[in-house]
Length: 440
Picture (cartoon, rainbow, N blue to C red):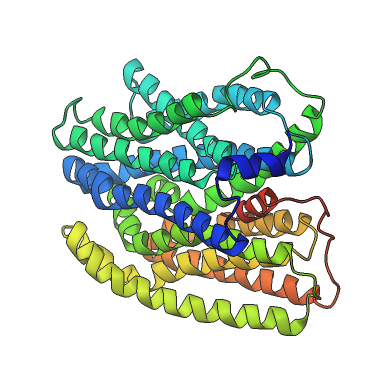
């Protein structure tokens, strides 16, 4: 495959200036994510909450947290590994599809375990359905690589629009209790995932061809990359979803619901600003200057200002949004708005700063910082959640995320004036997408 030729063919942007093309791609990326997340937060989850009640909705959120951890670690990890393979001239589908196929055994086991432990569901039908949902979610997180590889952000947008459409339809299944209280929410979410995966199967190439499960000569290198990125994304996923899981284990479902609602706007902001990392990496990939203290100091000051502004905006939006959408939970959630949202904003800002630093330092530091973060997360949040409940996890998340941000800043300043790793001369625009993804 010749990446540059395929980019021009698929993107239909051949005559568009690079800056305009980048803005168009960013807009389409964000539009797709806004459509999907908007439906989740404004329609699907409120429908499930009303149908099940505060305590049962918390149990469902914990189940979905488990699915998200699986999908992010495996699906997103392999997605990024596929992008890395493309930029390094190791283009292949076989080993990645095999990797996904083998991982389904692990996915099935974890799904059934979570179902039995959290929901006390021992029925064969429910567990089979939940396994299907988990597998579809993993494939959906991987599937958008089809359109990122070809830099076809129109189809990327359609991909996420189809998920949103599926979730809309699913919301009505929940509202009218079409499949019963136990099954409707699972079918509702699986429907959106299935539409996206089906779209890739019909229009894409990653799941097609004679070599769909045949390893390439680069299989060893590609699988090693996939394992490294899976580990990195597993740490990130556990950090993002750990609040629900810990509250479910040590407290109760209603606490999961309250904290979810309290952090809702902050997490939406983090999700919707993720594509910004792609723009940052795009510019940094072409940056030829030194990594100076002035350069990184300015970036740090901007990051601090962004955290302050976004936290204030998230708190204000929470008072409006939650009062409208989750009016029955607003009174319980509102005391946590300031510090709970601040914790989310600090987390995603630290991720963006890591994206900047990784342009100039070895990627091993990402794993070191994330591993240290995971250790601190577990050591601090387990006792804080056990003994402090929602306030404990609120202060704990803000604290460990602040430590992560400070660690990234220290790492950056320690490497200023030292230049950075060379960007390969043959790197194409796909590499900017890969870099952006490492901290999404």
